[in-house]
Image (cartoon, rainbow, N blue to C red; front, top):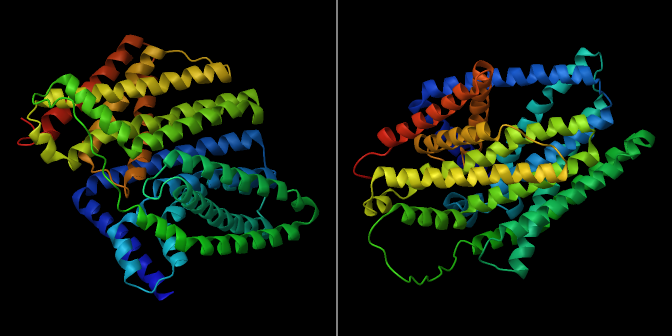
Length: 465
């Protein structure tokens, strides 16, 4: 227990506070502006959600409880995937190998703050529903509060144990030194789906034997803890085995000494195809396609249209934003290698902007086409959508140069960028929607402004000539 508190205090909380102090000293005004903007956007979300909830009049506790389980399980799965490589950091290796901490306590410490962030997000998302219930005169009973708290703990333990099972199984049967992210994610999704179906089936006991359901949650909580405790040692062992990976030897047909536009395109294609971001966003894209395809089987046509618009406006934007962020991230990581290319700023930057713009266009239109084929929802305004994607690409690329993207701040940067761009897009549509050509010009000028900012401010000598 002492070592558990030590890891949480010295490593987890220490890194958070240190990074927070550095950002506060370096960007005080920007952080205050971001906090004020976040509060404004959240206030708008609360008002809109509260109005929608009051009009719908859905106050059945079992239905709301089921929606809470879905959202919690999705966010927990995303948090575990995004923080899957935290154990490979040197700080964790040092404390584990030079302390008496147990494996299960070590794993829980590593994933404590990502899961805490997920529960905070769930609380913020469902706060308008709680306010709506209180306004309607419905006070949540102690039984439902207890059930929600126990369910969150059960889902956290079972989701983490499911991920550990898949990682150990893939490492044992496929490869001990390579990460097969797609295979692990598919198995992880299947196990999470089974957990959700189990809890959904068990919910039928609430109307007949409500106390029995709480006993069932206690049993699941104990089983999840024992499962996690039994897997922790093997999981940590497999993670440490992946620290030393073999490097493939590549054969080059021809060594090129001159840099060109096509050379940079090919270089970025190779870098993109080998990065973990490509795997993560590809899995997210497949998940969004499957989620969209399943909407008509669960929701009414009106709800399907509303949820589809939400997916396009927010979930799909995460992919469109995350990919161009890699330009700045690669620049910060490989400045010396970029200098050795001896290339011009325009060739280096334009090739990468156009590459990720083409990837974003392909992602958007493939998703729109699949949605029209599966659920029959047609979309219009593809020309303006293409220009809007150009603005997203340039804005995300500029943000990647300004902010050094890391595992610590990646999720925060993406959420803030989605909120900022949605707000900018809303203002442009409100002011310029009457004139299509003026709106298209605004998109182009905004994209050119972000490109010029990167070109003239971010790319400086002697990194690039």
